[in-house]
Length: 125
Length: 302
Image 1: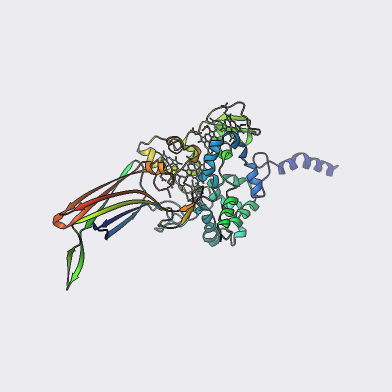
Image 2: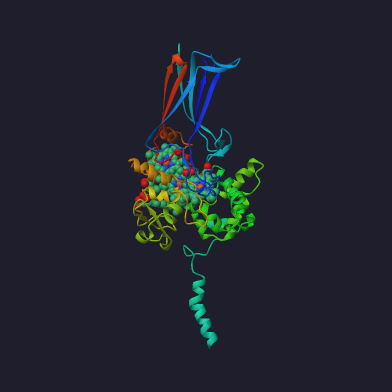
């Protein structure tokens, strides 16, 4: 499960893109801090980054309307836009990335699913 | 005389012991086809057509293939797991025995316990098959799907969890387990259905849907853990629905028992709200995404 937040200018130019993953993180052979690869290696949990049932999870993103640029020896803020379109997408990615194919029981399909999409406008005008 | 006595003892006592039925009154299966024939459920289709068709599309009908990932992971279990571990006794795929593969088959194919090593060797041969064309893809999928979790697993072999309380299915000839008693069931082989007290309970699914590490093995595996998170996160937070109620009844999905690839399940799984705010003085936007998992377990499952 991956949450993707994309901030764009009103004419569609991407300003920022954030991505956060949700999944359980099982330990490799039940020891240490490394995640196991397949079910033959996994034992126990190091972290649980999956969404817990009957629980609300809030993820906060602070997105600048500006970019930071170097001006001589100083870093200054340069305004990019006064209005942004924010796209929030929740992807189900069994392979962990937006690629691959799978058998769905009847046919071969792509192995990534856009589950939810919400768009919002925000401005500082 | 002595010889005769020994001979008689052998014939009367030892021979029957040697030929003891392993399970269901038969010897271990030697091939994929023989094991599949033992768990043949094609007869059910005639009368339970809708259920059969739902099941045929379900993950349970292809538990060695899955979405394709299961077959692929069987290969890596051998090449990246078993063959690399110093004490596994496996140096090459040919060394893999049923006992090695039970760490997967416990849930993906529990009836493998009633098969000889030749069956796992046959499974491995197909799993390792090079897939170059679409035809290869389907051939590999179809052969691997001959063995699966079907009607006879849930309604017979694995229907009972507490065997000292409810009995041993393999000892009851011609009996299926269902939601109620059917004294005269019309099937030719399975002529009776007994009411199973756990048919509608989560524990029926829990035996395969995982608690965490499978400690009973010399080298524990860990795959699904939906049942563990159901008990410790969902029930523990006041949840009260069963696996059957969400996966079979709520959306009338019956034996399809779907998950993320089903639109209705996907909609029911997470609620997502987005709130935006801005802070003009500092030229910042604040985006808050609130997600509520409405399934009965962690999401996704590891």
